[in-house]
Image 1 (cartoon, rainbow, N blue to C red):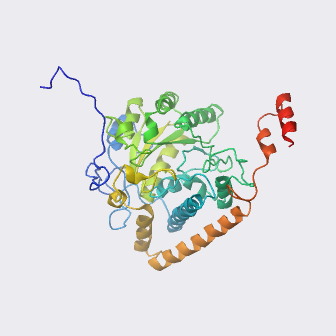
Image 2: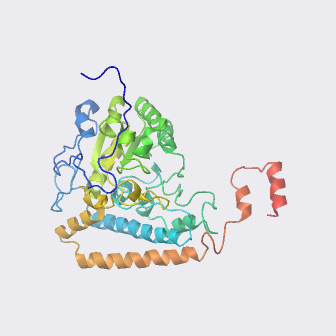
Image 3: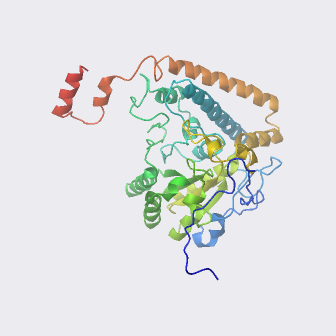
Length: 410
């Protein structure tokens, strides 16, 4: 019997700290193809177990197996591989640019490329994503110009956001990419509200909300689930569980729920966990959830089980809070390597073609970088006009701002 006379405060701790041996024994990885694929109109109460398992398509031999396989053609898979490779190369060049002082800040997607790249291909034109800062793959996979992305990162004269946003906080209505917010979790309730508005206006477009595991501790996360479940909003609610917040492991935000997907169960929302490093599985689950939303069946909560292999941002040093070799021990592997091996097994790819593609993509990214830098970087070249900060807010500029603009001489 516990000592009733003394209370102890509990603070969750990760399995291993720096200097220790990486340990992912707590991550149960089901056999690929073993998780059933329910009909989209399934009663959420009958699939509660999907909130505790992990949907996987690619097995250890690079084969696509099970009921979630077979949705993508070889050409679509090859395009998906190229999107992920492009995002990784883009990240490497922009991280280097930050270290060179060409921009103030950057955030990489290393190890998480499949999540956003595959998800985007499951949507239709006009659908709207409400992303966090680690879903640039939504833009890459939709053909958004890398030069424009770099201009935003450099805050130069060609920056489409006129230097008003932190680097990497892109925005593109045409590509269904709502403005990223530095305030955590706000995009979740915005996604639900946008989806409700789409339903109220009898539109056909759906929304997707994105959040990291750490930000699920914010009250906006729970408010979004209340409204989404009550009004059956046509929205896909994505939780990217990459194991770490900035320097805090997932257990702090997760609490005792077991999984992040399980939180949707109390709201009657179908909740699934998927292997976030399996391009085919991510696409299949996203397609299932999007079809539910578009069929007036309401929201779906999806947890992507992945791993942040790099630092949280260019301002972070992960070696201070986790073993340096931990990413190598992650049991779900590298999303690019896994899709590459699958395509080689299909006979439509090879190590030689992969190396050639890496070189081609690097040339393309470097060319885009040179073009972007011709418009300026953080400390050199063209800058957004001072006049821009007075524009774009009011249809008719109020007198006090007109006076300020005149005083500024712009």
